[in-house]
Amino acid sequence: MATHDYVIANQSFPNFRSDLNSALSAIVSNNSNGTAPSTTFAYQYWYDTGNNILKVRNADNDAFISLFTFDQSADTATPSTIDITLDTAPALGGNLQTNTKNIVFGDSASASDDRLQFGLSQDLSIYHDGSHSYIDDTGTGNLKIQSSQVDILGTSETMATFVDDGAVTLFHNNVAKIATTANGVTVTGTAVATTDTDTTNTGSVTLDFATNQNFVLTLTGAVTLANPSTEQVGQSGFIAFIQDGTGSRVVSLSSDFEKAGGGSTLDLSSTAGATDLVPYVVIAANRILLGTPQKAFA
Image 1 (cartoon, rainbow, N blue to C red):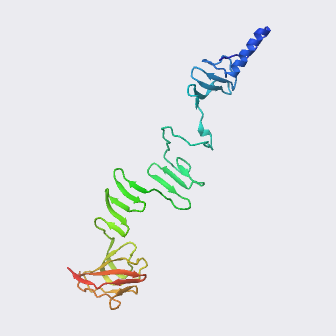
Image 2 (cartoon, rainbow, N blue to C red):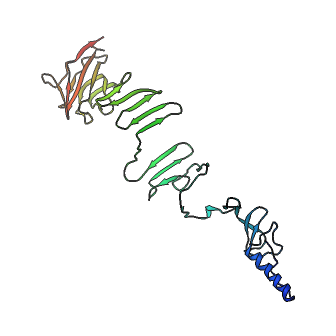
Image 3 (tube, one colour):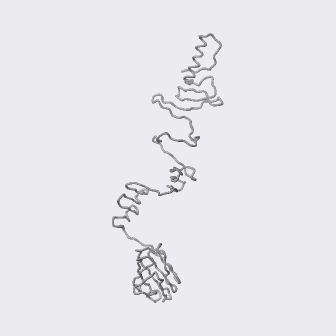
């Protein structure tokens, strides 16, 4: 280990040779010493033996920059002040190990920051925007989650489970309510269909079967049930007709609605305030079968 001022004095040959050897020794050993060389040059190396750090002199020749810290027992080196943010296209030569640490992302403000991205065109992103967390798939194809069982969990409960070759189960407050079976669906509790309650009906009325299963219609004038476009084959439910304070409101049927024995009007109560109930079932496109009205509920 040696340092040298790299100045060879005019001297006798034996002294000259010794001085030269000292200078070469300092070069070969990277000026290894516990203290910095007394004479320095820009880009000069120094191995700090007191701290086991390899350093290089800066271009201004006014300070040393730490490069690597060495563990001489383990024969390893750790970067000291290398800033990887300066590398705009870093590439791994092997697997990245977290070494019991975390990879930490900040809140993402746009597609260009703080996101974990996958795919040649960064089609899949995982990020948090400060308010919500996202798994965002914007590319071609589907987002697929593959496992023998997938569980969706709340903070302290199960919300849904998906079992390979088994049931899909939906929970309410950690209690299973809907589960698929080999034969269909099992509902635990009461299945409540959406009902449209409309207190003003006159003229042409189109029922929205895509949104509602049942209908409660107050008749405020003569009504014609127009042909809908949203019914589904197998759908069934009821239509309740309530006469307003005047009564005697007539309900006519368009061609998609059929009643036993034919006819284009429903046989409803005429009394003011009367409530009649008509069941229905959709058996085919443009065929809605209406049951016999159950009249005058009180």
